[in-house]
Amino acid sequence: QKEVEQDPGPLSVPEGAIVSLNCTYSNSAFQYFMWYRQYSRKGPELLMYTYSSGNKEDGRFTAQVDKSSKYISLFIRDSQPSDSATYLCAMSAPGGYQKVTFGTGTKLQVIP
Amino acid sequence: DAGVTQSPTHLIKTRGQHVTLRCSPISGHKSVSWYQQVLGQGPQFIFQYYEKEERGRGNFPDRFSARQFPNYSSELNVNALLLGDSALYLCASSDLGDTAFFGQGTRLTVV
Image (cartoon, rainbow over all chains, first blue to last red; front, side):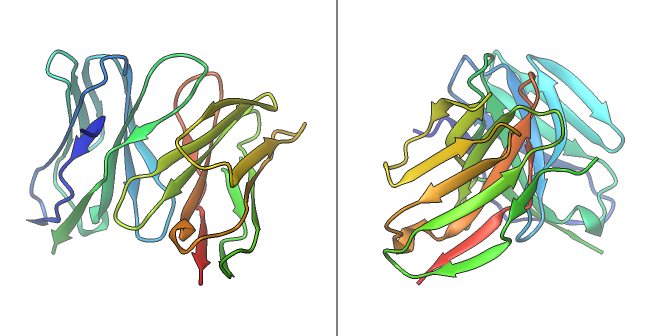
């Protein structure tokens, strides 16, 4: 079993839709939760960063962490064609040993 | 401020050859990590260096090695290249926190 599970998609939605992306994980030591956006053949770009449980909002993006269920989500409101990319969930445990564990990524296409 | 810079952006190598990839972290960041991303997968952790010392290693063979220099830049070396080493190699830098900022990567093709 992988430490982080993420549905690879692809996920196609019409422009303006609300997008929900999700990951589950098995390692209880994870305390830091990130979402990265990756365009084709580019490096991952940090979108959201959350410590422990709770919600965080930044513009059209909302990240949620439920540590009791080991489940994290990213919501994108009013999706745009420019949001078409692969979205990677990522997480790490505290400490100086900074290993980030990624999901496989969900490919999102927003159709105009 | 410049972000994480990696060089070269692309390269093609033959099986059995050696390759060196380079990374310059964000100014002020002392931690550099290396990841391998195979097509269709998430990045996999290879190494982390902090203050020029190896602080973590992923499940990769000894053909992979790295080092960090006094200016905090880093090199990733891969010996005896295999076809399966073809991937996007990503460098990430961070400060004392646990948020990693990635470069654009080096796309390595082994033929």
